[in-house]
Amino acid sequence: MEVLWPELFEPAAVEPAVSFLADRAVTGPVLELGVGTGRLALPLSRRGVRVHGIELSPAMVDQLRAKPGSDAIAVTMGDFATAQVGEAFALAYLARNTITNLTTEGEQVACFRNVAAQLEPGGCFVLENYMPALQRLPPGETFHVFTKTPTHLGFEKYDVAAQIAFSHHYWVIDGQVETFSSPHRYVWPSELDLMARLAGLTLRERWADWGQQPFTSDSRSHISVWEKTALPSTRRRDRCEAGLRSGITSRTGPQEHEVDDR
Image (cartoon, rainbow, N blue to C red; front, side, top):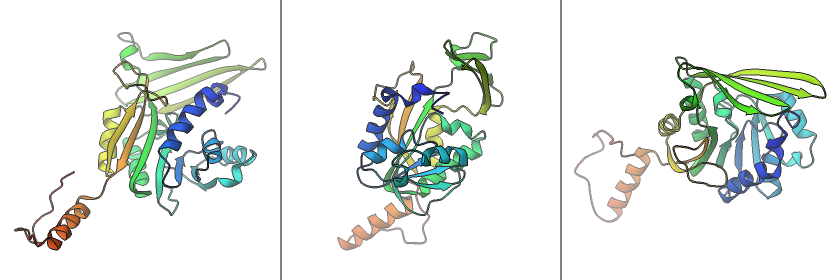
């Protein structure tokens, strides 16, 4: 990872993200989906935040374990769309467009539900994702170059009908050409908001970057924060209990249907 994407490990890329997450993780442990080699988990742990990671790749975890301080980070092996840790977290986060590695709508919805199931009430899910570049494509074109340096060319080909972008990378490292390609299901913020709502999460914040610049129509990426809300039945029960304590009764009995007042 460090060899192919060294810019992601620079302090200018890491520190704003870690500060953003640490500011929202003051009440308890955090869960990183796709913890990888610990780019964010390690500096977050050094700030005193207890981090638990989910990771599918044993090779990534081996790199993490080779780094100082990694013994403080517990890791559950598995797919972050389905893997359960067995405890409740104050914060969960998914960085660097990783939600698009789930290449079907069903998998992305399952990810949100899996996160919600592992958040404590009031806990937050933070997601970093890019804005699809469709509006920057010339008419009739399907290719978009997103990185062009002397050592790295990155471009994607959009299949609009399938909502898939095929990402292609070419690096020149020590005189040798390295290549990598992968499919990604690109997704809009409004679609993510709906997935969150289906999982019982509501949007709390949205920024253009980790530095909390305003999100606008020109933003190339977004940092979104959704909060876990109480289930409608729980809120209704709380209101009923409060009414009984104050001597107020409802004209609708327990046989009446629940009202979804989200």
